[in-house]
Image (cartoon, rainbow, N blue to C red):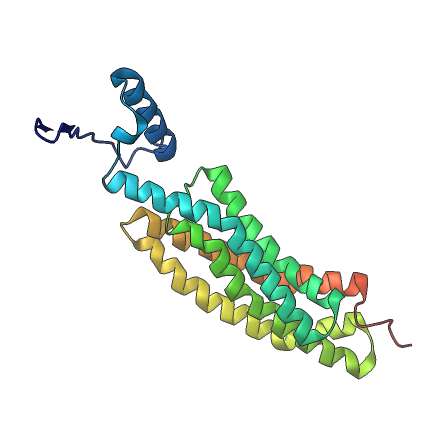
Length: 226
């Protein structure tokens, strides 16, 4: 379209959004530079619009906020742990399983080449928010069991036989629910379901295996009683 009165031209360009090799930001930047070089127009005379540009702007905003969001989540959880357990060491140990789950899901996405989009970019923060419950329940039970005899290993066994069972079956229920997303015909929903299931399993495994091991190793509740 060309308007001689307004001295404006509109050029329509189609892009294959489903292409796995499409890098929207790089594509738009290279196209913008090529138009300026070929036409000699001033930068203020060229403007991109459309769904591709809108979607790219949304994704770029999400990318920029991803690290800040995860950082804010972990800081908030650390402060909550500190206020709840009144112990810096317990607060730091309680963060470990959640960091493991978030790191696992982001690492798998990177290795598998799964792109960050509106669906997948929220998985890490969601899983951390859901997985933190396991750490709270386990640490609270462990402290109560430790008060009985002051033995870390026996406290771990009793914690596993009580709250550990509840954590296992609760996570199993959540996993079964999210696994239903894998039956979807919408690819982002499948990614969301698979990655969430993987992260939830990592979170509960971290709470039942890594967390008690760290508690026994660092003894944040004080030395064992003879």
